[in-house]
Length: 202
Image (cartoon, rainbow, N blue to C red; front, side, top):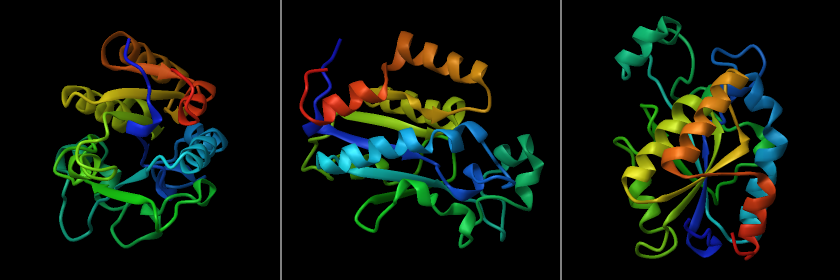
C-alpha cells in the first residue's frame, strides 16, 4: 500500500458545476449537492496545506456537437446543459473556487483526454513532483471514475474521496468505491485525507 504524501498531491474536484449541482438544472445530481460541505472541507484543507486545487469543467457547444456519443446517450444535451459561456459551467459557489485555483475544461468523461491536465500535474508543484490525485466531485460513477482509472494508467496514485463524491444512486456510488478499492486506488474518508494534508502518515 502506497503512502499518501501531501507534498506530492493535488486535489482534483471534478465537474462541480451549476448545471450538475443546482436544483432543476439539466444534469442535476442531488447527492453532489448534498455533499458540498464535505467537498468544501477538502478544498479548505488543501488550501491550508498549500496543496494545489484543480477544478474540471465539462463543456459542450451550441455551434456543433463536440461529444456526439455522449449526446446520443442523452439527447437532451444536444440543446441544453454545460454550454460554453453560460453560467451552467461555473463552479458552484459553495466550493469557493478562486482565480488562484486551476481549471481544466474537458469534453469527455475522462479529465485527461485531450486536456492540459497531465501537463498541469507534471508542472504545478515543480517538474514531475505530483504523484497523487485526491479525487472529489461528480458523477462518481462517470467522470470521477473515468478520471481515476486514467490516472492509474498513467502511474498516478489515486486517493478517491468516498465522502466527497456524488453519484446518481447509492448503488452506483457503492459500485465505484468497490472498483476503486479493488483495482485502481484507495478510497479514503475526509478525516484520512485531511490528516494526510497536515502531514500525518497515511
